[in-house]
Image (tube, rainbow, N blue to C red; front, side, top):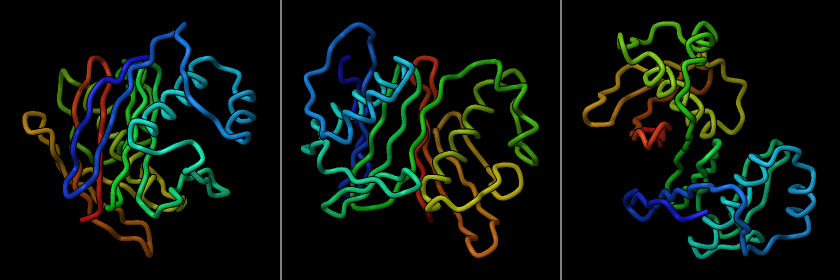
Length: 202
């Protein structure tokens, strides 16, 4: 399970990626709560992602004990810095820094086309790039949700991706959820057959 890459997010944040390789142990120290949580995970894929995030925490100078969880599952850092976590199949991602970011990574797969009616209303989908652009829009909405403090957002009616540019890897989005009307800017990068997105409130 090797460290994959690091993306600096100014002013002092960092987004890190770990590539999961099956069959390799991880020398990571876990709290009792995390050991119980890990033991309760039935799928090896979920266990691998959980451990890979702990390796990224150590690379960021943190330990498993530095992470707290809200009742709804949102992670918090004891030192007050912001944190966002995502993992999907072969990759785990971790953001830490002073500014709130939401991050998401998802595997690009044609089956997302079938799910289009559940989260696409007015977004433009590029012909010939349906799996890529649909996955991008999904990751943007997931990243926004992670910034929302678990508000009951509808990906179909409350979150809207207004623009995205595949050449620059940037875009904009909005939330129209009553009482949480916000604008967002995001960046994204295709890594192998995965889409990685990081987003912040403007």
